[in-house]
Picture 1: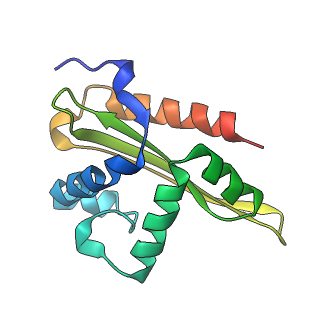
Picture 2: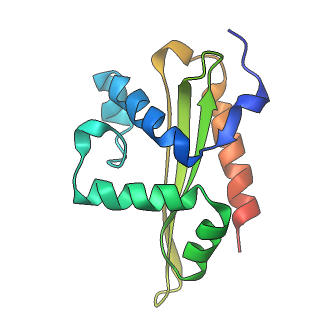
Length: 138
């Protein structure tokens, strides 16, 4: 299966349902390693719901910039879409700037579905994510 750059994209709000389905389909080993707590229909909680709101807001550039301006947390999510139009991989950077302490709390995660491993998708997701993070830097 060939993989082209055009299918590495910023996540859109309409990708969220597919992202949750992809996460729920991961092996237990993959979930043990990649367990951000805000993905998957099986981990629904109040914290999960708040993360969904932030995730959706983060997919819209103007809203993401507004959240950053007011020191609210954002996600920078990237998805890799396979030729069959399913999510083959996901990477995110979570950024939370703290106003009073003037510092940044962040975390990063990346996962590729088992049947798409070894194709360079993870490396390319990471490269795009870092490029976007540099571009978004204030």
